[in-house]
Amino acid sequence: MNLKNICDKNINSNKDIPREVSLEILEFAESGYKEIKTAEKVIKAFERLGQKDIQSGIAITGIRTTLDTGKPGPNIAVIGELDGLPVPGHPHENQENGMAHACGHHAQIGSMLTVLTGLSDKKILDNISGKITFFAVPAEEFVEIQWRNELRKSGDIEFLGGKQEMIKLGAFDDVDIAMMTHTTPRKIKFSYGGTDNGLVAKFIEFKGIASHAGASPESGINALNAANIAISAINSQRETFKDEDHIRVHPIITKGGNVVSAVPDQVNIETFIRGASIDSILDANKKVDNCLKAGALATGAEVKITTIAGYLPLNNNYDLLEIYKKNLNDNFNEKELILDGHSGGSTDMGDISNLIPSIHPYVGGCSGNSNHSVDMVVDNYDLAILESGRMMAHTIIDLLKNDAEKSKKIIKKFTPKFNKKRYLELLRSLTNEEEYLS
Ligand SMILES: [Zn+2]
Ligand SMILES: [Zn+2]
Image (cartoon, rainbow, N blue to C red; front, side, top):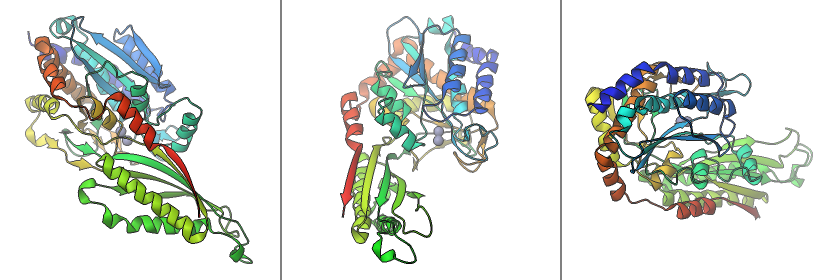
């Protein structure tokens, strides 16, 4: 009996369900920790596909449900992300909140559901061991940071990323291996194996003294000048960043003053500091803090720096990737498959990948300038949802057949970068507030 053939037949005969759910979600994109309607659709889809025990409301909107073979063995997570992000003018912008699925997360939910349609079959489950747990996770996009920071302060969440919060709450405690497939508008069928930067986020408030900008600027302290000096100082640090660390510091000024006739007494900056390793992020973070203080020192302003833990660098597990890649090669032409290098972007799948063996490949079937751009849309749902789900389902069959021999080997060989306790300590140590009075 060829389990992969049975899986493909199941996917084909149920293909309308993941597609319908994805297209529905596309029309009412919601941002992180607000994915209420999106989560309802996913729960309904799980029920429609025969899942009975569905845990919901984890980290506000997160969901998980398990397909159990009834035999002992590893638990493999298949992840889909629930959130959209603010992209004004996107063709599928939600007019109520300005959010859009310009990162294709609606298609990820579809590909996760496709895996369930393929594997939820007695003939398959009788011939594999262990469990497969399906996750719909909130808040992957690191956006609306100030709003999320308020949620953090009120105790509704501790971490800004949905997977981080779900890890803390124990939703991944029983999971041994994780995978998901992200969409990309690059002209490829699949790409795999790439690494991503990690990040910390900052918001910075410069406080000066307002005075009449024409009549008495000498009696004010110009917070905008402090911010400009700080940004120039940050730019002067760029030559100190090593190429291999892929440091990205990209500040924006979110408030530049109150009125043109007064010396600005309040200027706010937000920035990410991204890097390929935790050490390099910490190094750049310290330099940026010094530059911010230099702006305050030069002008006599005050600066309050709030630093918030972002995501950890992403690493794919190469043993797991080997199995996934073999399935790609069995189904696609080598020219349609790309081995990725390093990306300056970041994802909280990075956090998962530091704890358990994980893969985060990409699937094409989209058009547009890049993920997050106003023209990024999925235009080939068969590839983005069905084929991407099918490749994960085939990989899971390989991992869990023969008494889950292959996955047990991968788990045994894997050395996590952190255990959960150390991981949570790291995130907590990265989050802090500092006031500098010059
Ligand atoms: Zn994104
Ligand atoms: Zn994304």
